Amino acid sequence: MEFPTTGVHHITLIGSNRQDTIDFYEGVLGMPLIFEQPNLDVPEETHLYFDPGDGRLMTFFVREDRTTDPEEVPEVVGNVHHLAFAVDRETHDHAAQRLAELGYPNTGSIDRGFMDSLYFHDPNGLRIELAVYKFTPPPGRTTTDVLAAAHRIRLERGADAIADEHLAAAVAELTG
Figure 1 (cartoon, rainbow, N blue to C red):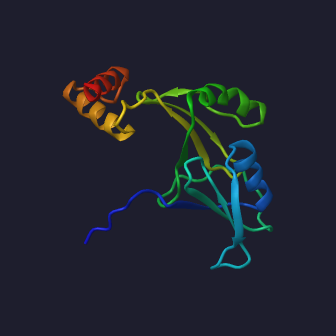
Figure 2: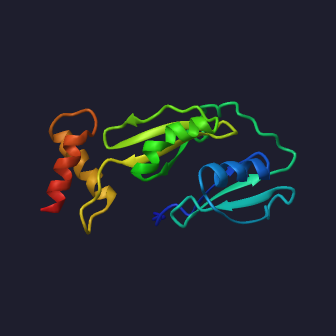
């Protein structure tokens, strides 16, 4: 039996303490804290609910006795490698400088073929990506329509990864 999903409902991470988590996710990334309540399964924890920008939820279990630990989260099976957040082009283009000013070293913009990415770490060592697509889907089409077409085109052309030319061809194909 299949269990078809309709999207991500929410993601819950373990945070340090309430204030440090709010200071970063609301103060630096601009995600409004929507509400908080006790963790209904672990009463000594608080459950913080943020809106990452799409009306869905990203939540954290926090405890006041947890200290913020900037040690990078280990890359082991079961751990989150990184969280990628969509930003607009203007935000992306100014993010590296602004993050550095706030004390967050980062990679600067990295060209990923179909998107530009910038990586840095939150105060608890979780890798964060700010990502912006390099295209706008034609009217009536979705981002995944463009990416699927660009993938097919790049395979037909024998390329290793999606590049600007594949995106342009996909958008043109989907427009016509």
